[in-house]
Length: 118
Image (cartoon, rainbow, N blue to C red; front, top):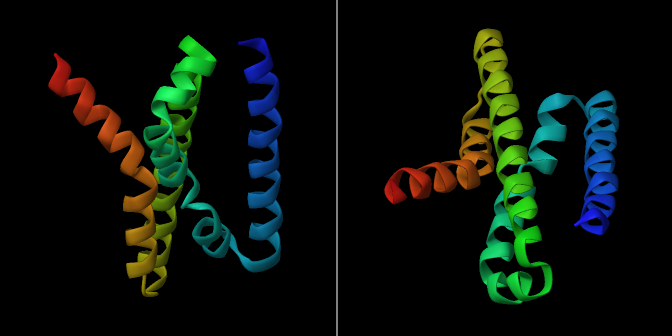
């Protein structure tokens, strides 16, 4: 479990650094559109390789799931802020809305599954 955390932390720091660099160079909307696909793809890969991940990591797979959902929530909130900011400036924001919905998809699926199990 500790080894998994040691591998996940640098990835998160790399994502944060990538977002900051892209935002400074090309703007925050461009940085968001470059990184919004990461939570849905990671969620999809966890779904596809679920059995092998559970065999290899046992309860460690929960950390990956929560990481994907947390990243999805953070990028979803960031996308909402970017959409509102683009709307206030009078710019078109259809692509940002679609990216925000796609980035929030793992958190939405997790919340629906959690509500269905109760």
